[in-house]
Length: 236
Length: 199
Figure 1 (cartoon, rainbow over the protein chains, first blue to last red):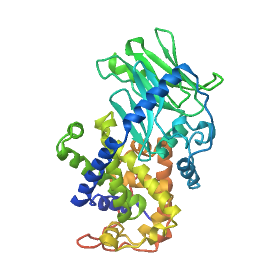
Figure 2 (figure 1 turned 30 degrees about the vertical axis):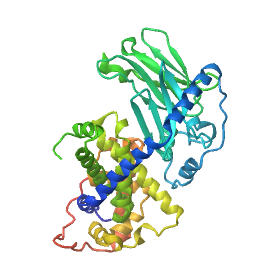
Figure 3 (figure 1 turned 90 degrees about the vertical axis):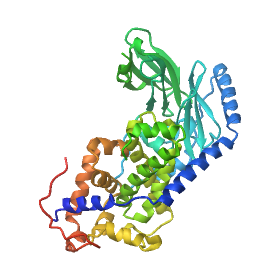
């Protein structure tokens, strides 16, 4: 057998000499700004108005979740796995696909909210994006979201608020079989939130000492429990 | 780059083009270097690195922990490399070791990168994930936890991938059949030395 350590070390050294050219960096900046300008031109106001309208409807009527076939992007991702490329947890198919990732979901979707702050899911140039409130936003492609949710039934974010501000919200994106979440506290009653559209947001206060987030299915059975106490230690 | 990454991110968010350019350079370089090894092709890696850097700049507003900029870049890079693999397999492109060189001047880059005869072919014998883990470890010296976060797997899986990859390369006939040769330019012959397992 051949010793490969020096070969690999040498390969790494050689790879580190590769650099993008100035023309490539210029092209990157140009494309990044074109994308921003394109987003500004698109009728986002229409999407936001539609999302707010949806939120009013959702507040009054429980929308039953319909489970449909996967979108092409998710199928292609899992269909292209190499034999030694196991996916931890359950593959994201059928009822496990959250509402905002389904092929028929074309417009912005309100998946949760606290007070006047809404967690909104929308598509942007093929990416799946989320806005929460006025300032938090993130985008990733379907494969990343699918892989995360295949490993864990929830992708958690927050709490919002910032250091020194204990009041905020814990929010997250959930697998399709999660229909509600319950946040437990050390010194106050639990709070439950609807997660049928693939997300949720719960008002939190670090002084209440949030403890665990329970994820429930449509029958109320607990699918998973996440310890969230560590997310709030900065505020104590 | 002497400015702290958090400062650059803050400035870029405020529209500072110099800071944006620095971040684009940083993201593209990291992605290019990893992708070149993971994909076995410096030419294809340049396309991937541009996609990564564009995604990074577009998503800068959503980055909650600016001090984890590099970790975020690696994760996007892994995603884009995988996407490139799927596109290549759907287009039934030529296998890794037979990618034409010399287009857009990248033939010399591939020759420089894979100067060790048989190395490119030996890497082609690995799985996509094994090559990815190797690239992240040997190009930028990422630890098991960092690689796990980039590849969205567990550290134990990373250790298995690296161990299998090294074992396959050690046993590879492609490497065994070719004695190390001098690289281009001033690269000197190196003796194998004593192998050290990376912690």
